[in-house]
Image (cartoon, rainbow, N blue to C red; front, side, top):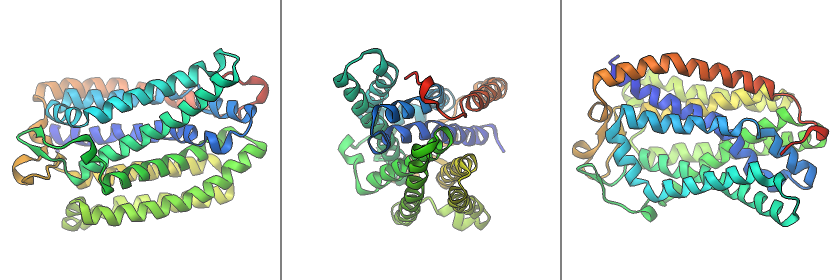
Length: 338
């Protein structure tokens, strides 16, 4: 495996970690109108993710930073192509962060209602935009000579919307499972029942997205050429089935971990399907697609970055495991902060 290829898969891994970590708190935010029926339940939902959400979003910055440093051409084309979408994503991140951190700072029913709306809308918009963006990458962008020839509204094609719905659905399930971990009593039971329903939705949307991907993308080419790679989607299927079993057994942590494995496997199914492209072009793909080799930085840059990653990423993971363990206990009403 070459250094460039290693970084290609590390790039995919960082996005997968972001989807797993930030996915559940985005899901909790989207579930606010469903499970937050009174002030106590709303504050419980906020407290379920409050100590962790900002740390989770560090992985988004890390994935973007690695794209910039390891694959500058991919970064340039990707971020210019999704300029409007990324601006909306930034706005959604801002209003979501403000609504979470400042909701409890003002004793006003109107202010709290506004924060709840922003929390729901911001979480949903982030999930939708990320799903639409990556679905369009899988489908192929109208890139010619490294220049994006499309428009923002062109990204809102049926397959792109399907990708957005797919991300929203899996994040909703991931969030419901996290609430199973952090809540008890009636709220826990509501989250468990909702997770059972959302699991069916995830199954249906996943099947639809896979079929649609076969029609609209070239993601299956590598798998058909090397059938052994089908172990990746099979791992996703096994994780999704395990998730349903653990929901039925009311073992929240196991169900959440199964959901995390499912998200990771789905991400790598797409990353392996993209290889060797990072940004496939829908305009003469052979001439205009951006491959990982063409987009990569110099070998020295990649070597230095690899040393930094091998030193600091394990430290970050250890910290997050500690944080998740620390805040894995049930949220108690008398200790509500947010």
